[in-house]
Length: 274
Image (spheres, rainbow, N blue to C red):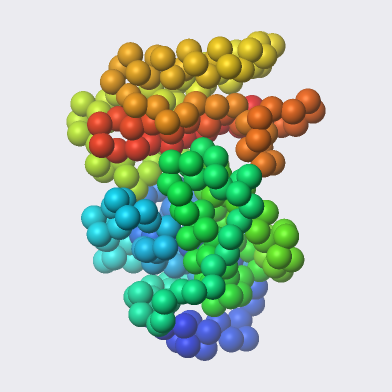
C-alpha cells in the first residue's frame, strides 16, 4: 500500500490507472470500515482510502481535539484489507487557506435529526467529501449505512451536482450483541457497553411492530424513547422516516427507523431499514 500525504503525490500515483473505488474515513478504523474496504475491491481494481479528521464537521464543543488518532494501527488494517493507496493529508494540505467556499445542502435534509443536534455538521461533511472526490476522482465511493443521514445527503449531492460517481451503501457492521460498530464506542465504560445494545433492540421492536401492520408511528417512537430513558439514556430522537429524504412517512415510500441517544457521555447512532 502506498501512503500519500499530498494531493500531488496521490494524483501522480493514480494517473493512468484503472477505475477507482474510494472509501473516505476519519481514521480510528474498526471492522465496519474494513468491510467497506473489502467491498470496494468488488467494484474497481484500484482501492483508495483516506484518513482525515475534518475540522469543518465538528461543532465548537465537540471532540475534534480528542478524536482518536490511531494512524499506525489504521495503516496495518488497510494494508491487510488490500487497499492500494492511502491519502492521509494534514490540515495545511487540505486547507492551505481558510475554506471560504462551502457546500450548503438543502436545509430540509440537514436541519433535522443529526443536523438539529449538530448545526453545520453536514455542510462540513459535504464540503470535505466534494473536495476529496475532486482530489481522488473515483468512479465509485462507498459509505456505511450506520450514518444514514450522511449517506442520504451525499447521495443527493452527487445526483444534483451530476458528479460521475456511483455511491454504494454498505450495511452496518455489528457486534455479536447487535451494537453498531462505531469509532466512538471506545468511549463507553464497561457498564455502558453492556447496556448499549438496547438502542438496537428498541429499533428492532419498532421494525417488528411495523411489519405486523402497526401504523401508530408516534406511539411507537414515544414508547421506544421512554424505554431508553427508563434505563439511563438521553434520547435525541427515535423516529420513523422515508428513506429517500428522511421526511415523515408518506404512502408508498420505503421507510427507515433511526435513533440517536446519549448513554453517559457517548452519543450512539443506529438505524434499521423497514
